[in-house]
Length: 482
Ligand SMILES: *Cc1c(COP(=O)(O)O)cnc(C)c1O
Image 1 (cartoon, protein in one colour):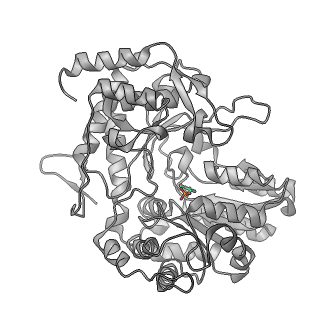
Image 2 (cartoon, helix red, strand yellow):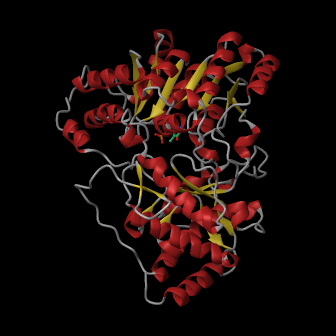
Image 3 (cartoon, rainbow, N blue to C red):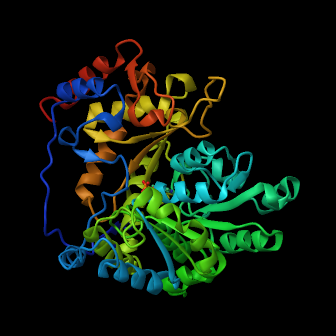
């Protein structure tokens, strides 16, 4: 939650939890950081955690676990089949979503693999507000096509629109008609639209999408990985949700969507993945893929301790004082930066604060990877690890030409219940310094470029010697300080 401070106009986020287990961090000198990022091929995925001060790569699998989650992990029931831990997962899903049909998987993308295997045939189209990297990779791997139908407002970096993840409903309707329902594998709604800045979808828009699907005879799928943040925004920004119980929103969604899946690395502060549906028909259609790819139907690749943490974490995702922590910290960081003039995605969304790198380094061409360059620079000057979410994260076209991203973002993820406010103040300070010194940032070029999901393990190098100059300027301005 956030509180007003004495003699201050600003709301300040306040941690409604205390830290009872700690992990030591290190902050290397800038010269060391320069060396480390170059050894990592300028790819923040290839840095070692021990060399990082603020790990803002992702909110996936790195959220703060509660005392009750750790407690639950101790009562895990080890069994190949019929584990009590899975029974507790099912009970939590029943409580939170109101659904009884549950398939386990080892993480979110495994659910996507199962969905793609079960429903996507070569040439079929999946319509979605926006793609996610792993979703698209699984769909295209089996010969499917992804089309995005996000409302035009979603791609405007700075607006004050509360629900930038919304579908363009007219376009959805006409696209289904053009294709014919048989050619549409499913319509996928991504809550908390990841790649456009963690932007939420309104409850009304989600329901309208499912109504269109129902009317046209097309399956509707909700990717609920970021639903926790999305529900926070529904409660804050959508009049009809203000007085609804959080649980009622989950239940309403489960009543409307044919299939819901999520990465438990995000929703539920744990690890693992879940597919659930109100109608057993859907889970039956997907069931055979679970033992094939994941594991038996009562663990699906998750270990029993993970399942216990998942079950407890789902109950916690009904607690406003837990679910507001991430978005309020992100809002604080975003406001600090935007007040200073740093181009960030507005309004603040879930999962992290996103720097708009097309505006940060406006003269850099897409094929020098502006978001990758800003991400590498942030590590050099602050020991901060962002994730590139721009052209590097795209796949080339089949003929080898670059597909330029709609938005060039450097994402500063804020894992839930992990960082303190002084750590975020540090990040804001270093980003402001980089903004004032942005003319020193140069581009990147490939050294090794993998064909699939290249952003995970590709290696690049600086064009020229801008990184050395950036580190030198940092040293001049900060003296002996880290
Ligand atoms: C993270 C994420 C996934 C994939 O989940 P993993 O557990 O990382 O495999 C899918 N969809 C969305 C929206 C995500 O944010």
